[in-house]
Length: 232
Image: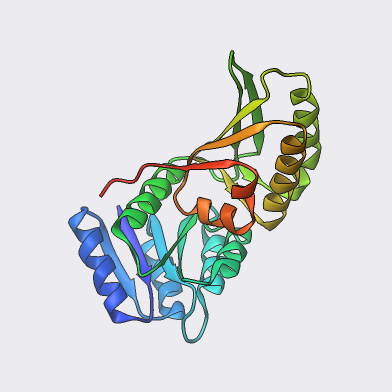
């Protein structure tokens, strides 16, 4: 499987090449965005890691150009600490995931696992929300891209939940799940209404870096967030 890493910092490129080569990937590197985009066109890699801040075109522009060439491409944004707003902007543009610098191996493993799983799925899976009543709770599975236009589906789900007992909800995210800024807002509003109605809410097995976005949005104040277990 081919992986392209785009970053203007040579130590970061060396680290990625060392780790990814050890995992058996065919690793290619580029030191700027323009070169990275050209290499993507030639190589058509399965997964791309790109730094968000680079001279010339930045990671967001790289992401936008790659997504135009291949809508099913898996692009993971590399951000610095404190760049969460940029990370959310990348999700708006269709990024698969993001990881923070300094890159931890566990976070890298989680991003790779998610990108590989999503690569096997068809692009543009329509959003779906499934409610499964169980004896002690209701399971809600979210699939596809969550955006603000899904609001009517969330309203119906909220109304359906009002008649359930006990008032316990477990939310699971499908491998195809993604979210943009408007989707985060819709999710937060719905969780607030559920909490006000007396529901306890748990997110199960959240992809490692999505939990950071949820925390930034204050979702951790409305629901318990249980991250996916990470392997070294």
